[in-house]
Image 1 (tube, rainbow, N blue to C red):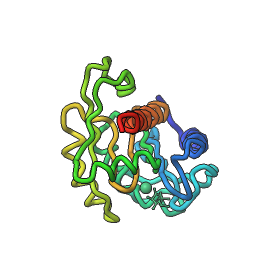
Image 2 (image 1 turned 90 degrees about the horizontal axis):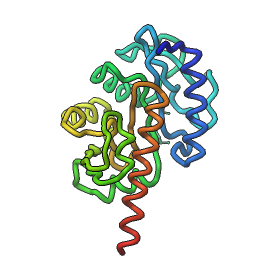
Image 3 (image 1 turned 90 degrees about the vertical axis):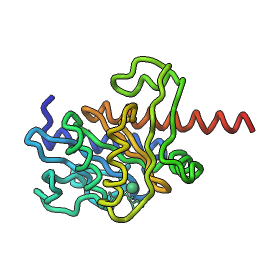
Length: 205
Ligand SMILES: CSC[C@@H](O)[C@@H](O)C(=O)COP(=O)(O)O
Ligand SMILES: [Zn+2]
């Protein structure tokens, strides 16, 4: 699939509106990116409200994070780039700050992962065709040093049955896919799984 900077910027503006409408982009939280045809990355500019993005809120960086257009890239650009470097098929990365995902990461205080099992929604993860599966959502402690997060999370992302997503504790959720539509589906499906697990526990109380 070809992806120009203009198409990527339009897509990211639209995605920001939808994720904000769902309460996953409060204040200036969240950041988004798309891999472009020339291998560079379109990423949101730091500090923008993602529900009110315009194409000016999207810029280009190379795979090392060097800006190719004016602006200050997202403070979490290095986490996006790590995913693109690790998984050559990935075309888009989305990061949200939903209260449910953050709540789960804090409730699972010392856990390094949350395992989803038995849900029909597990089929949202590309390559998984059954509810009879265990998909692992890795959880990593937060840090303001992106290199620390990246190093801590990398083994879990490469482990068998890892979701194309991970949680940063007390911070938010990262999700990715072959293109923006797939990344949005994975983010939405993962958020749904988190909400269902929370609802299940509320019913059992
Ligand atoms: C308002 S808290 C959110 C930020 O600190 C950060 O975690 C975030 O997701 C957005 O940072 P940004 O630099 O705008 O991409
Ligand atoms: Zn964040």
